[in-house]
Image (cartoon, rainbow, N blue to C red):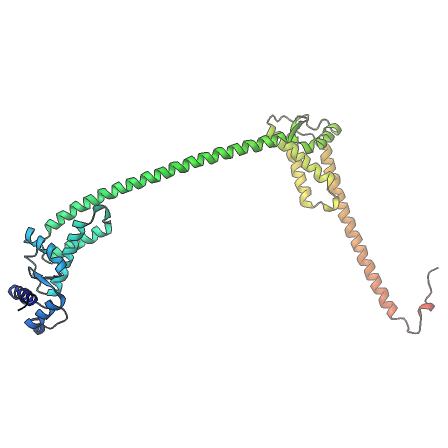
Length: 330
């Protein structure tokens, strides 16, 4: 008898000593046949440890478990070989996870899975209190490892936030500097004329206003340069619209806007009766111009109608009348 056959017979004796087993997808009669059992063990090179069919790679761990915790499978009642093998695989998988994996590498999902499997094994009759204690230790270590990892992540995020804050301060300082340069540059392009800070291009217009109408700003009480500049620019805007824009290009909306701007300027203390008169005059001229245009359009339409009637009359003249016989005006 060869060594392999002796090993197979030895495993088979263990099976028959343990009891009657059932093989998955085989009938009870086939499972009870010694020939089938021996062929199965030979074909898959399995070994029997404490009534469980295991792969050779699992025997070392299984022997260690049954040596240190012999009561582990004493109360397992199932006689189904496939189920017993499946349950033992679950047990070995839990043992390997808790014993060989680093706590920091075990996720919460894996721990939940292990906990559920431990509960399942307990219901199946396995005595796994020792493994549950191991699980509790590993869970604690894994939790501590996750805390350490989270603290490291928080530290990284805090460093990133600190860096972003520094970048924000830098950009704000940069923007402030640009604003200052822009304001300085803008200030350099402006001049003070007649008590107002205005663009150099507006000096000629300002001279005309305050020389022609010297009392224009006599009652202005504003002290803030920004407000003074704002209102004098409104004044310039109204003048530009009423004096420099052709009457034909002015719209009702523009005249309404000029009226509102003039009202704001007046409320600010400017004496602009002369400009209000100009607005009334331009508005009247615009209305008169529009009325005249409508009258002319009506006259044109009348002339067109008269010409049309004359053409009709001319067509009704006898054909024997020639152009030479039509009398001409002296």
